[in-house]
Length: 140
Length: 140
Length: 140
Length: 140
Image (cartoon, rainbow over all chains, first blue to last red; front, side):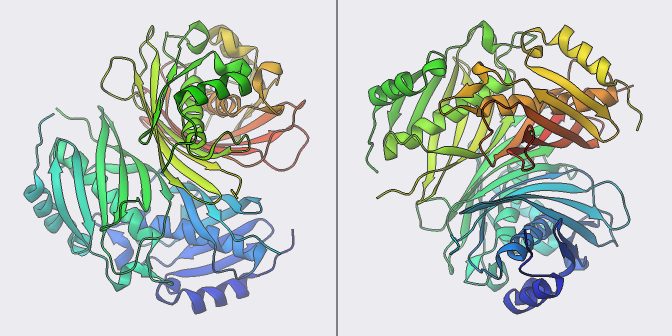
């Protein structure tokens, strides 16, 4: 399936439409296989003990899947998350960015489904995985 | 099952151990039925369109369940979320706090399981629901 | 919201449209609060060790939510499960039926969301809980 | 990580310890990447409309993950499913077996986490995906 938005287009969309959180993320890759997104981990993403917080990991997975959907359907602002099931498996290491690999498994008429693996940069074992469903507006 | 921490004890724990996020939340109630927690919704919890963001709702559900567990086992810092499945059902209204009702369904030797309903204050229909599992340290 | 199908109507629908599995279930109640459904546990629902199997509990939760939706929208055959997140919390006791309490939390234009608690008959603590999403056909 | 049980050992375990359901499944592969399991779809796995039923897909995902865990820890009967979040994405085609690809993402001291993709044989797009958590007995 053709890509309607590439890495640069997704990064520009993120900057223009997600002003307050765009600075947290960097789009690393967008291709047929999906989207890779980086959480630029800073002090405010941490929680006591120095690991990246659960809500920060959730946000990373959610934005990564959103961008994977937009890469296929274009800059449609109306896609909304309807379900996320996330497993936290290992503590992300402090001082490392977190990388999300999102892949789209279904792009239907009104629902899109995919999953995301999250890694501490430079580490082979995932820190979390998530399955997400988005409700998307019917397309012409 | 007896409560080891009441509303005031949970509020004090939140303030002392969760410095940076404690200001977002207010413990409304803690009793046999569970814990009610309020998200004091401010500008930084919103996203484009004016609704409370998904990560803010996730954080509210997660903290509410954490406090419901602590109310039964005491201030154990080592409980960690292992899974959260959350359904986003309605857009939270801008300008309203979000209230979480957490109930504990199982408190096992190493796992605690519960669920949470989230409401825009003053509205009868839930904006989200979540099921959460925590890994808890074995107790004496 | 008005009930379009009561206990007797749901039981008749189950018998006519779910021939091969209808004998496993009995509709106990259908009202504003939701639907209660009984799994008539027999030898073939058990697994080694004598507890009711996971797939049998899944099927019970799934059918209970399906009937809770139909009770509100009528006998629409086209509703399909899109997501189920189920927590298995305690072993169901052998020799006891399992009771499901399903409640509908959202009935939208194309999605219905609800949750289900499962109990071994006569026991106060739930053996499992599930959150389910159904895709439903748009209504007139 | 070394495999403690290969394809033949898993098939033998399934036959000896899961008598009543073993005939539904065939172990196709077991290696470092995970386990592939086939549901030998017959009349009793179908539901009205001729597609493979949700409980049958759930059972396939659950058994595939169970075998993926056993391949690493040996024939430990005490592993139990604690959570499964499953997305149903496409109707499985009647008259085709369903193939599960299970991969283990974490094998911890007391929890194992993995995910499973399910395919109608010969079709490229998955019919379902599941994330599963198992509670496993501490090992020596």
